[in-house]
Image 1 (tube, rainbow, N blue to C red):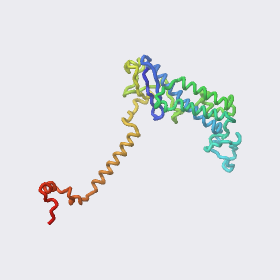
Image 2: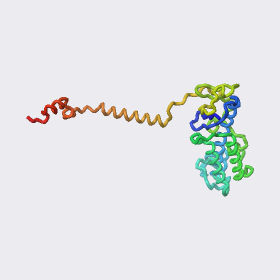
Image 3: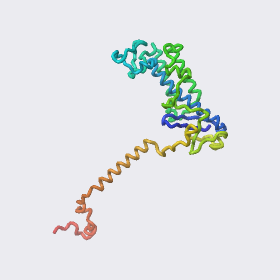
Image 4: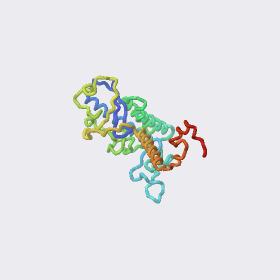
Length: 282
């Protein structure tokens, strides 16, 4: 099995994937794009469910951002119940699910987010559709426990929209960066994988290979090459360079020549030591 390290433009949007080199490139591109979209969906839905468990459903648009101050607006922002966990941004009702249901929803959301996070790459754990599907089902179950049959969840609540596959994707955030499988392309080593071929025709036949590739839209063209050194190493190098510059600057400004009168700076000290005339006082 060859391992692919799939990256996107966002530094945290990457994952590991394993496949065989005998797979068709078209099938591979479709599978990668679908897995990428599922991973994004898990992250997006877990974020919505986490906020749902903490601060309750989302408010109607006309009351979002309003506080309980009656001098601001005549709209009753507490019409959905007395807030037990107010949202500081005034975006949600502040009425989370009752009892342990809120804790179940919060815990399930956090576990789902970590199950597909970018930390898996450092742990060398591959991501699969089965993992994404499992946590999507868990999020659905936890939401049904907290809000049976979407009770108190309006049709415009983002968690419900995602669960019903009615989410609005505009690509403005990293959690909406989906790719149409028919519009996907993979670049590696400055080359694009060509559709209509087998992976081994373009990558060789060594199954014990790790390939760092970038997932792109077709029209995006070739991705920008990554720097040869990582950001932390670059910072350390620049810090060392700046330190050496400061040292050289201080040495250049130091014009003290008092050392010339020192005995160790006398170029005739060896001759005096050999003739025994070094310590004669006149």
